Length: 171
Image 1 (tube, rainbow, N blue to C red):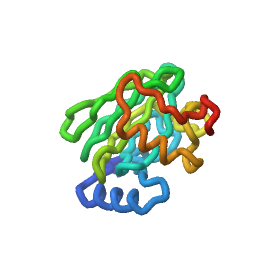
Image 2: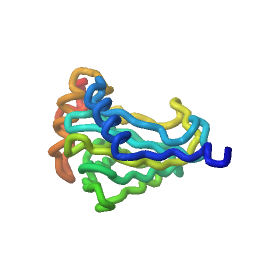
Image 3: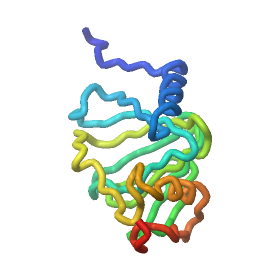
Image 4: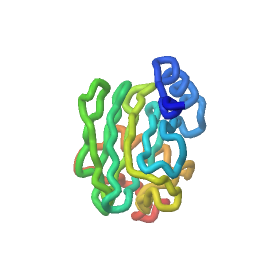
């Protein structure tokens, strides 16, 4: 059938994603819109709430990522190689802020409002081992200190570096 590729996302589907994200251990959850992981263009929704930890990471150089907020408010954080915040960019629903990361740039996201939802677009195929490199100076998800790091990211300003990051021997 010609319309097999159509994927319609409505308000109820987004509300269900938010509820499932709130119940998840990570406090966030994504919904792939692409039909398979080897799709050449990855499209997904990512729902989360304050306190959810997105470990700083970077994608390979040239592997861009575009993110905009469909619901709520999410801040994009950009870091230098030492873990210092170089930019804090508000992404709010209604197109008030869109970020396109060219790849090779350390970044993370902070869910500012409960039930925020981002739309992400990036080239595929998705290969878990190649998708991203995690920052050695930030704690692993679920590791002692990850919650504190997430709390720090929620309020940190440009120029700040977490005093308890892993590169200083605390993790």
